[in-house]
Image 1 (cartoon, rainbow, N blue to C red):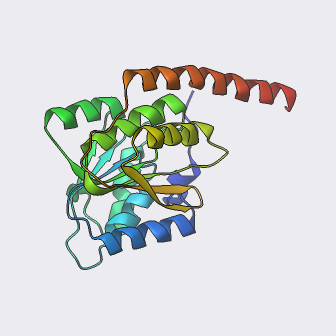
Image 2: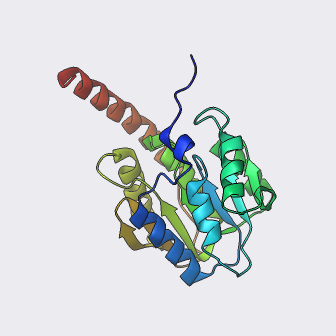
Length: 219
């Protein structure tokens, strides 16, 4: 069965709302972080284009995009076209067309670090908890952003809240609609343990059952 085309594939716009995009652009412009920026989950590249253009005439930092490119048909081609439409060179973006866990292992083995991380990929709690492991590679003073932090996506909220309880050196800087921004205030070790992954796997089953039950009760 052919995968259904996402609306963002047609519009090539960000899956964030206009307020979130505007805030994100201002955030990057004001902080002017020089180190590598990584986006985990890019959809059609609308948010990527907005972030890269936020630097204006200043030198844009290196951008890495992590996405298996299976969200909709020809996703990578759509992202490249979107960059071209916005007069951005797709060759300036390091596309890592693999799953997040594979990309993280490679980044760790290469000793990479980042000034900015945006997580907007799979929203199931076990995936979000894993993606939060990327915070281990965030430089002190860097920014960690997650999209869809809202009641409609409990997996995102529960994973982020647990992460914050265990990592108090990450401070909530701003919450704009569904976009939460955290700043790493020190170089302390980031804690996302195997137990956290087990906890997330358990609650993932619970939340999946809850959704299934709701569909049956309210078809």
